[in-house]
Image (cartoon, rainbow, N blue to C red):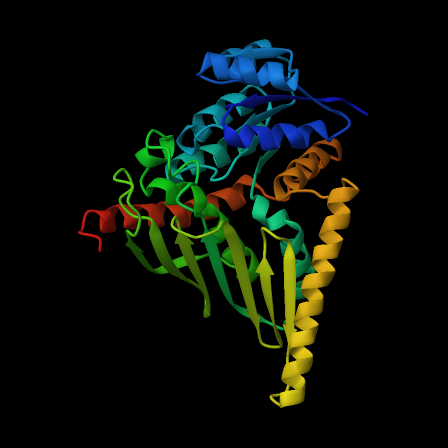
Amino acid sequence: MKEIKVALGGCGFVTNDHLKAWRKINNAKVVAVSDLNGSLAKRTAEFWRIPHHYTSFSDMIKKEEIDVADICTPPHTHAALAVESMEAGVNVLIEKPMAMTMNDAEKIVACQKRCGVKAGVIHNWLFEEPVLEACSFVNRGLLGEVFNVEIETLNTKDDPMASNEHHWCHKLHGGRFSEMLAHPIYLVRHFLKGEVKLANLEVSKVGSYPWIKSDELYAAFKVGYKSGRVYASLNSSRDAIYISLYGRESIIKLEVVNSILNFLPRRKTSRFSKGSDSLKQAWQIVKYTGENVMKVVSKTWMSGTERCIKLFSESLMENNEPLVSVNDGLSVVKTLEEMCAKIAELEKKVLV
C-alpha cells in the first residue's frame, strides 16, 4: 500500500486535531508543517516529531514530495494555498469554512476541475458519532420526512478565539461567528437535502468584550418549504452543541458534545404513556453514556475530524471522490458570505 505523505499549512489550535488524526492512519506520514510564526512551526514539528518545518507554505510545497496539503490556516487564506497546491499536482484537504467569499470558493472549484486532483473539505460535525446515527435513523425512514432542523452552538466567554482580542477571526466580516457558522449551514443543508436560503438573521451583544461587536446570533433558513433555525452564543454557561430533527413520524434530539441521541417516536397522551416515555428517554441517556465510556476505554472513540481525515485518505487510496467535495464547500460559502455581510450590516447599528 502506497504511503501518503502529508504536509500541513498552519500550526494553530486546530492543527493538533489534524495531526492526531493523520497519526492514526497506518499508511500516512506527516513530513512537514509550515506557519508564518517560525517558532510555532518549530515547536509543532518537534512535539509531533515531524522531520521538516517552514515559515513559507510555498517553500514547503516546492521542496517536499507530498501527496496531500492539509490546509489549516485562517479561512481567508485558503483559496490561494489550495490553488497553489493543486497547480503543483498535490491533493488538498481544506479546513472549514472552505473560503470566506464566493469568488475564492469558485477559484478552488475551478482549479480542482482543471487540475484533476482530489480536494475535500472538513465538515466534521457531519461525522460525529450521534450525527452519523441520526443519519442512519433518517435513511431508514424512522423520522418520515424531516421538515425542520434546529441547531444550537454554544460557547462560553472563555472561548479561545472570542476571548483573544488579537485573534484573526475578529478581522473578518462576521467576527467569531464567521468561523463557526459553516457547521450549522452544512447540517441544515444535509438534513433538509437542498440549498439553504437565509430567511432572517438577528444579532445582539450580551458580553463585555469591547473588541466583539455582537456575541448572540439567531438565524432562520428556508430549504424549499422546509425550515431551519440556528442559535449561536458566545455567552453560554457551558460549551454545547444541540441538534433537533423534526420529522412527520418522529423527533431526534442530539447532544453532540456528550455524544447522546434521544429518539422520540409518536406516543399517546395518556398518563401511562408519558411515564413510559420518560423511562425510555432516561434509558437512552444511560445506554449512550455507557457505550461512550467503553469506546474511550477501548480507544475506539473517534472525533468527527478524525473520521473526515480517515475517509479522505481512503478516497485517495481507492481513487474515489471525497465525501465532502469542494462543490459542497462552495454551497456552504454562498450562505456564509450572505450571513457575514448581514452581520456586518447589523453591527453598524446600535446593538442592545
